[in-house]
Every structure is written in structure tokens, then in C-alpha cells.
Amino acid sequence: MSIIKQLEQLGIKAQTDIKQADSGDVLEKLRVGLLGKKGALTSILRGLKELSVEEKREVGGLANRLKGTIEESIATKREALSGGSGGSTIDYTLPGKPHAHGHRHLVTLVMDEFISIFQRMGFEIADGPEIETDHYNFGALNFPDDHPARDEHDTFYVDGGLLLRTHTSNVQIREFEKRTPPVKIIAPGRVFRNESVNARSFCVFHQVEGFLVDENVTFGDLKGALEAFCYEYFEEGVNLRFRPSFFPFTEPSAEVDVQCFLCSGKGCTLCKYEGWLEILGCGMIDPEVFRSVGYDSEKYTGYAFGVGIERMALLKYRINDIRLLYENDARFIRQFR
Ligand code: PHE
Image 1 (cartoon, rainbow, N blue to C red):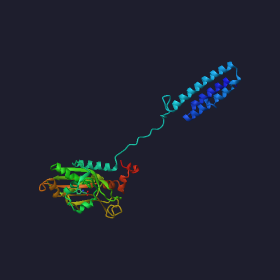
Image 2: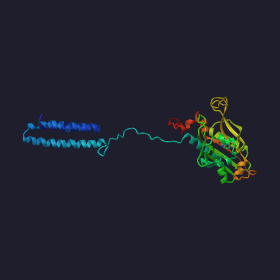
Image 3: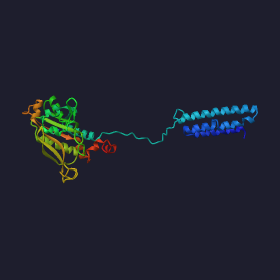
Image 4: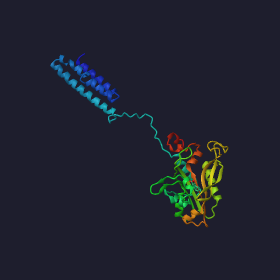
């Protein structure tokens, strides 16, 4: 075959190969194979020495043009492969990747639900600091200095004589100081207790504090409000039990239990064979609290309660370990939207 013919065929084959190259690597191999020192073009041109001067000139010119065309084709193809303007490597027919949507955490959902129920019942919303003084967390709430109830709260103390609030009851005092009765408020928020972490308790949790002060407020009003709230929240009949208790800032005080939903009160591991699960503390506001904020305790009475959000979330959604709420395992969290 004549050299000219060989060059022509090399040109045709080179174009097909370049077109089919599907990566930069393949293209580079092609380039070396065609134009490199040991490449196809060089080896064809080895036959040049047998030709006459005239023929050499003709073949040489042809070979140069061929080399140029091949180089150009390779450059164009390289650009296309790298996604440049020369061509697109995006496959528009691939199915799209859906965006992962975030959503509110179960604790927030329950908190929001509480807020919405109490708002419908006519409560205003208030907020208070998480880093608090002893006065607002304990003193003004009638905790005597050496009272064991302080120890029960397992307080985290921070620098400057401050502490992390152990309950949302601090907001009672802060709001009473700002207002005159009637007062009807809930205060949702985060609280901290230096307790050992287990299935039932965590060192950080949330509460909703509620308090109402007016003339002629009775324990019956408190019971009515809490029952209404529980019926709304659990969306089904629940049995509540008011059990006498003690808090320094309420008198009388009670703790409220719901009948265990797992065993219907018969007794099981969840309720520790009690048949009941504690959900909140409450009572009639102690006149000592009114005295510390300058309210006339002869004229006004009031009730207060504090509900644990996590505990209520566990009950409604049948979750058996509070720690699941704080491990941020998406497989768990995603179940509650
Ligand atoms: N603050 C109390 C607690 O955290 C709950 C409570 C609030 C009790 C209001 C009575 C009145 O345990």
C-alpha cells in the first residue's frame, strides 16, 4: 500500500477512535499511539526514505496536515470530555436526586402542641433565662436556704454565683414582678438537672410552666384546666390521678399521674408495677410567693403547674427511653414529623 494511502487510512481511523474515546485517559493513549515517537504516524513516515525528493515533499506535507487535524480533533474532544463549552457530558435523562427536607424534632413538635392547646385555653406565652440566679430559681419561690428540696434539684452551678435553672418556675417570679393580676401565662423552656442519665431521666429536658392568678381561683380551676389539657393532648380518654405532694411554692401541692397506657393500670415494667405514670407537679401558689413579688394574698389566689415535655412525648408516642430523644439518630427522629 502506498504511503499516501496508509496516511489516508490512518486519518480515517484516528477520527473514529477519537470520536469514541470516553475519557481523558483513553484520549491520551490514542494521542501517544498516533503521534508519539513510536506512534503510527512516525512508523508510516519511516518508509519516506525510499521515496524520491518530489514524493517526499508531497507525503511530508500531507503528513503534517494530518498531524495538525488529529491534534485539533483530540483537543476538541478533550474539551468536550471535561464538560467544557464544546459539548455536554450531563445526562439529562438520569432520575433526579430528591432534596432531603428537614423537619421539627419530636420535642419541638410536642412543645408546639402544648403551646397551641394552652393558647386556645387563653394562656399568654412568656420566656425566661436559662442561666438564673438563686433568687429566681429558689429563694423567691420559698425554698429556705437549707431546705432539702434544693438538693433534690441536683443543680448545675456556673461561675458568678449563677446556676442553670432546674425548672421553669423561675418565670413565675419574673412575670409576677412585671405584671399585676389577672395573670394567665405559660412558659415553655429548657431546664437542667445534674441527674444520672437513664431511660427515664436526662440532664437536660423541657418543661411548660403554667400559672394563673386572679380573684377566687380554686383548686377546682386547676383540676379543670389540667384535665382539659390532657384530653386535648392525648386525644383519647385518659384517667388522671391527683396525688398529694410538696413543693415549697405551692400549697396545697399535687403530682398528677396518668393511668399507664401499656397495662391500663394493671401494672407493668413501664409503670414499675404502679399502674400510674407521673406527668406533672402542680398546686395553689403559696402566699409566701405572692409576698415576695408584692401581690396581695388576701385578694388573689392562683394555681401553677409544671409539665415535663419529654415525659409527655414518651407517653403519647409509646417510646420507652428518653435518651432516644437526644441521640440524634435520624432513623428514630424521622418517624415523628
Ligand atoms: N417546678 C416543679 C418541678 O419542676 C413543678 C411545679 C411547677 C410544681 C409549678 C408546682 C407548680 O418539679
